[in-house]
Image (cartoon, rainbow, N blue to C red; front, side, top):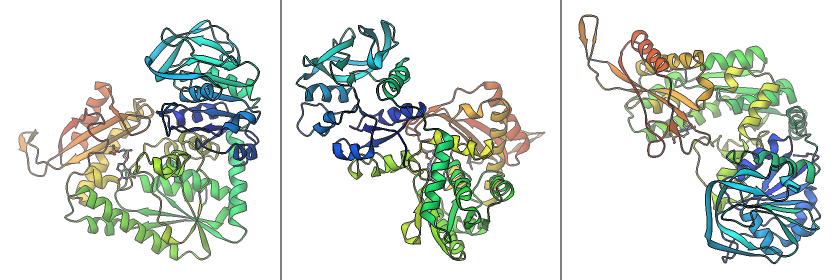
Amino acid sequence: MSHPQIIAILDFGGQYTQLIARRVRENHVYCELFSPDTPADVLRARGVSGIILSGGPSSVYEAGAPRCDLKLFELGVPILGICYGMQLMCEAHGGSVHGGSAREFGRVKLRVTNAVGPLAHLPAETTAWMSHGDVVTSASSDFETLASTDATAIAAVRHRTKPFFGVQFHPEVTHTPLGSTILRNFVYEICGCRGDWKTATVVEDAIERIRAQVGPRDRVICGLSGGVDSGVVAALVHRAIGDRLICIFVNNGLLRLNESGLVESTFRGHFGIPLVVADARRQFVDALRGVLDPQQKRKIIGKLFIDVFRAEAAKIEHARFLAQGTIYPDVIESGHGPKGKAALIKAHHNVGGLPEELGFELVEPLRMLFKDEVRHMGEALGLPEELLWRHPFPGPGLAVRIAGEVTEERLDRLRRADQILIEELTIAGWYRKVAQAFAVLVPVASVGVMGDGRTFDDQNLIVLRMVETTDFMTADWVHIDYEVLGRVGRRIVNEVNGINRVAYDISSKPPATIEWQ
Ligand code: XMP
């Protein structure tokens, strides 16, 4: 992206590096993650206003530890080293780093002896979050110590003549309460950024890029999923090229209640975007008949989705591009980010998109954005709140929320139970507070009494699942209000035929996963 000002974050593999990027961007300053060995010339060519060296799991004194190009220190731009980044910077200037004795983890008291540079406006004592085994045991005489803790004498430094700074603690995590002030000081007061990276400019910039890429006659196809990312992409591409965008929505019958209706009313109704709805409900249920294994279900659904999509796309003339809602964490986590393929952290299920052999060129306007930035963009583009704040929903949909065979009857029960849960959470003000909430249908023959009779045959159990998480890699069950839980349970049993029992899942991830299958 062509932004007037950019901060480069060199990623040494720290677990909080993405957070540094988010904190910088919260200050309306654009930043990108770069690999640790990015040549100084590349950063000069990008015209970076400042550089942040991230934390990381290595020790600077180990062979093979990631290093930065030493010419970075000759670029004349401000540099802030965080944890490993500070150790690297000090070592590169003749200081020494050792492991062992000064290990610190968690919140510590930070004594600020000189509140200048990134520590400007900080009180003499504050809290900082530490997570390190190594420390700078001596810095060269070029450096002055700005802060210390009980265990770490050199907890923050500045170079005496150059704009180089280091902090041993992590200003990017919320456990360092004044951390945002520190990063703000760095980007505004030291790097001279103006904070001109705002949603409106990001939208305008993305629109210009789409126009430049697509050209005046070609058409773009966008597969809508009902989720935030594809919705924002569609609205954005439509702003850029109007009716040359055609959206395809595959109704696989495994969706939440009213999902198809919401997509149609939003994109066709409100935005007036040409929308093809492929009604493939029958095909999917037929293909899933008798299938019990969840991985098998996923495979069948994934393949059929591509077949249906491909058939619809083939009917659209002059379609050269496919617009996809790939976002920045997908890019980083799928190994295409700064650390390259070798550092593949996880093969995240939500990354996916359509296969290359469909033969389209890709338009990916959200590639450099985080989820919250995508939501802000969606707000600016006028997408309804209901769509913007919808909980994530797996591609294989309700099929992996039915333990056992998928049938139309079970889908219908599950959909209605799920809708009751979502309605009650919304009314009680809980929906936005949980990361993901849904119902799971467990087809056990559950015994119950209803009216005067015993119910047994064809009675199923509904399990409610609600989790709190930010990254979906670990999650806690939500300590939801019992009143709300009780109301949801009562309504499900009263309103959904075939359900006589409701349970609440109190497993965390790990060891459980978020989905049941
Ligand atoms: P798990 O169950 O692995 O879920 O803890 C983590 C997140 O991924 C979603 N999920 C999927 N998304 N296709 C998807 O697009 C899938 O097959 C799939 N399985 C799980 C899940 O909803 C949660 O947000």
